[in-house]
Image (cartoon, rainbow, N blue to C red):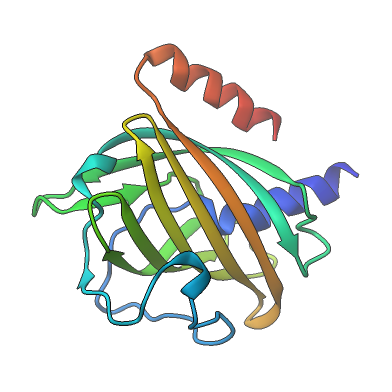
Length: 193
């Protein structure tokens, strides 16, 4: 039971636990993600940018719940808490950072639709255990509700040793962290997952 829960957390972290910094030499996993994002209100004609809306800037606690899964080790209902920091890079572009040992971001693309909505397309690789290689290609749609609340829907294609093993979807609620004690309670919640 504990090992299954740990595997589910590792697999779910594929979509949540990376530092996003585009690398021109990196490549996307191509494959199974749907191109039709009409349900999320996105279109293929949206302008490509590499910046999130400026209103996202700051530190956010992210509570994600798996709402649908085709993967046994990522069960529906599984929850994970993480911390996301939207910060400006040296060029002044707003990027997102998830910090987790063993994970590498291979490529990211951000589409900003307006000052409250953005779509993130990313590929993440995990090689921390040395036994197998995990990878995920995800599309995340972020919508800011107010100054302190954001929601996100994610669709993730999961790969192990280069072989597609299935897809899962998550819904997340992000709450802005404004006090140092908010961060410490998030750390405790992450340790318990």
